[in-house]
Image 1 (tube, one colour):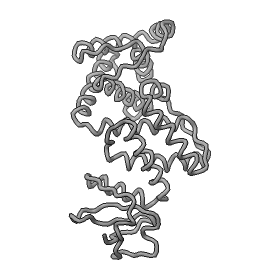
Image 2: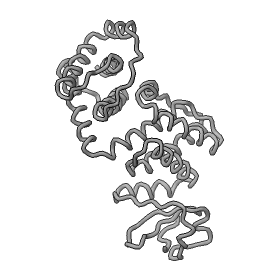
Image 3: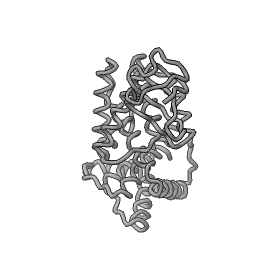
Length: 275
């Protein structure tokens, strides 16, 4: 292995035996070494081979500007997630999660906290992914000597959820189709056009991605919203609830999935916010 580029003392760009660019990481891997120097394979602890050229370029740009500590923490979280979920995550998670971990630590050190408005839903519908997020927060707090809020566990869980969805292209296509169908129902029923740059719209689409994934992967969580709360939301947002009922009918007819009262509750609230 010959060094093509040095990112820091622990991370380099090199090539494998097939002449393909890879990123190699190891403690002190590039210490006192230059471009062109040979690296023993025994010194390499982790190799990144990203199939997407654009993703590889983004990854290189990212690691060139951050400490390798963030990459190490990201690796640990991803390995833990893949073992717990028993699946391989989409390679884009190396870019997205590493960048998020870096920015999360930067924000907290500068006194900036961001609320995760989907935290309750993530905890309820994605228990494993949320537990991965909590595990990641513990690692980050210990490694970087910070005190991250629970909201960060939710944000990290969202990266893990997205990485699972992105890995299965047919399911991703189905999810996008269902989102289009749902937004069309809302557009026609409520006679609205969405502000796609708004935070409410972003949160709603994120919720729909999770909702659709549950349907296609047949994850049906227990119901916890009581009848009184459901009735309160129904009375407060009658037009949004009407949209929800039409969406539930569409999904039952086309996808043979019975939308639970909990899911109707969250859908109604989201629809009310964007309409």
